Image 1 (cartoon, rainbow, N blue to C red):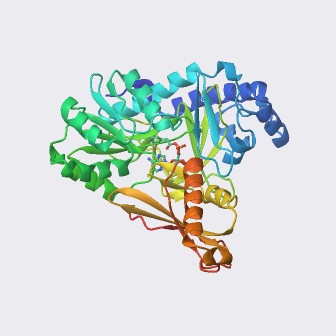
Image 2 (image 1 turned 60 degrees about the horizontal axis):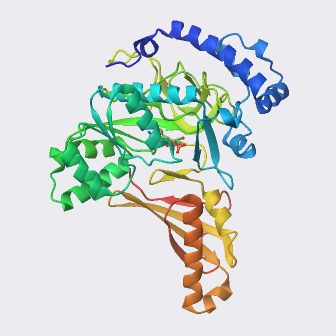
Image 3 (image 1 turned 45 degrees about the vertical axis):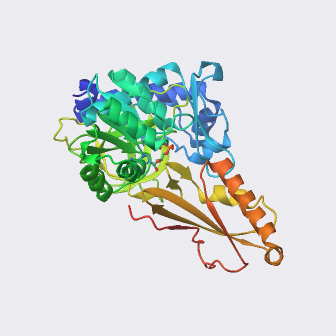
Amino acid sequence: MIFNEKMETLSRAEMKNIQSERLVKLVKYVYDKSPVYKSKLDKHGVTPSDIKTIDDIQKLPFTVKEDMRDYYPFGLFSRDIKEIREIHVSSGTTGNPTVVGYTQADLDLWGEVVARSIACTGGVPGDMIQIAYGYGLFTGGLGLHYGSLKLGLTVLPMSSGQTARQLKLMTDFKPRILACTPSYCLYMLDEARDMGLDPRKSSWEIGIFGAEPWSDNMRGEIEKSWNMLATDIYGLSEITGPGVSQECHHKSGMHVWHDVFYPEVIDSDTGKPVPDGEFGELVFTTLTKEGIPLLRYRTRDIVKLDYTTCACGRTAPRMSKVKGRTDDMIIIRGINVFPSQIEHVLLQVEGVQPHYQLVVERVGGLDTLEVIVEVEDKIFSDEIKVLENLKTTIKRKIESVLGVAAKIKLVEPKTIQRSEGKAKRVIDKRAL
Ligand code: DLL
């Protein structure tokens, strides 16, 4: 089923007309409503009248994650906070998190793109969906929720965790669709077996998995073990949350809903577009958002785009799986973590030195984080209790700032290998 037949199947030429109209309106809108964008455009030497078609988008300046941090909390909003109906928050690089706000129209748009995404996987009105993405400030739970309501599904709003309960309700209620991170889906496998369930007999026929990178190997394992179709969903809070793009059952790339989120792929060093079909940094312009519309937002995700028509009939371009990032962000149990955030926490703790390493592993389907950090010599000569207290302090601080549980290992000065170039902060041992 195609949820929005027109927007998902328009020819590229017809779509360009719609995108052009929307971009012209958007640039006027942000110029009038957002002092930050007005000054950005003025500095860049462009006025709204310079933008006549979608191809003029290249005249516009980029927006980057640091802008979100610098104008924290609401400085980048184009609407007064009283007109914002919902706020979501994700990780920033240091200190301030990234804040996004949705007007009622933005929430409707979010529902629409997620409804398109669920329909794209084969979901139909009347299906039951078990949503095991986290609800709350993270966009996963509520994003899937709004889309499910829009499409007419029955929602089981589980949020993440409580695995035994997830599996019991799956067995009793028989939802057809499961939405969660791919690693959580794999994690549930062990628990299902421990509970004596045969995963191949589960009611789940369709999985909507995203929020973190995963490979075709993981897909194979999920599909074989749970006997279900595993599809990839992509999104980021800054653009809307989940539902920016979604795979159909042909599993040949994620359809980008480009009538509303206009994608470009650029060379991250030069900022110029890469030739069609080549890998580069993905950039989005939100063509119709009101609360916090963004011009040319640099996602830091590396992908390529395919504009050929898919076997499903959709013309919406397909983006490849995310191949990597242009920054050092890692995703642990679906939570975005920047090494700089951990550094920020460590440096607030007395006795700790600015030399640290993060070791990420996947044990039984779950990501683990170990923070190895050098501490001053004199701390090592103290009693064990002092060391233990220090570990607990660091652990608590990291957990409260990042929301991620970490194991802390304290080491003596000069234990961590020094680098002559960029320090190697992250050792990612996960084989996806
Ligand atoms: O992760 C939104 C989301 C929720 C997407 C549920 C899909 C499902 P953020 O927390 O802002 O938003 O993180 C966005 O996560 O820039 C990517 O680096 C990464 N990411 C999201 N989806 C995928 C995916 C949500 N399918 C950041 N594959 C993005 C690889 C993904 N990486």
